[in-house]
Image: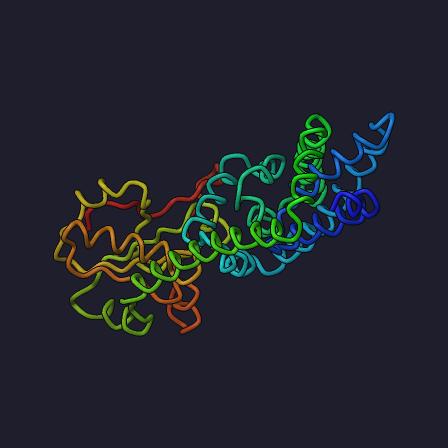
Length: 327
């Protein structure tokens, strides 16, 4: 492995960082640490080669991230939903990213690579939010440089320790690689199994857009919760008629505000309605008797040709609309 790193280090870094930024599940930080250690042990002075590797890392990251930025700019929310379907934590994938982005804007890209899952969705989100290309390149390049610098610096500072680990692994032979691979596979399998169990439990009940539309035209009008995060309502400033904005983080307020015998329908902007299904399950635990996610959310509702209402904007540009309260 050490010989491989010494011979193809820069190429390995470029390929690994590019693959990671394109969304493949291949961690690049270990490669940066190994290459940083290899350069520190082989080069004198080491700063010029390290700067070269850093430049290659930033270039690879910008290439891959630009693909997702442009996809987000063109396809909007659909791009982020597709990415979150690949995540082992898809229930929080979009919500957490949007909240970071809503608070810091495109600047979040300067630290996104340090937060697991954040960089995967924040890049296409920047495109969907129509962030200027110059701002995207500036902050994304800064984030890539900071992230790669940390990896290379760790390798350079702990070069002797990294070399000792590599020698130990070399003595263990192929068994060490097999063991690492098995541990990684077991971790992914456990996370995936938990995800499948959760999805199976949450998929037990959905309401179709046609059924909701029929209910809204009857005397038994349900309460409809829109739990999309504010940034997604910025991108798609429309709601199902009569829907109220609700934040699942304020569940206690919602529980105290609504009668438990009323039918409640919830929609979100997440893959497989996971966030809506999670909130429905929490409300059932509080003795709400009839709570269901809307299959396909507002997108499916609109595809059926049903009416949507525009969310008003005040003079400051912030969204105005119905707030979660008694109905």
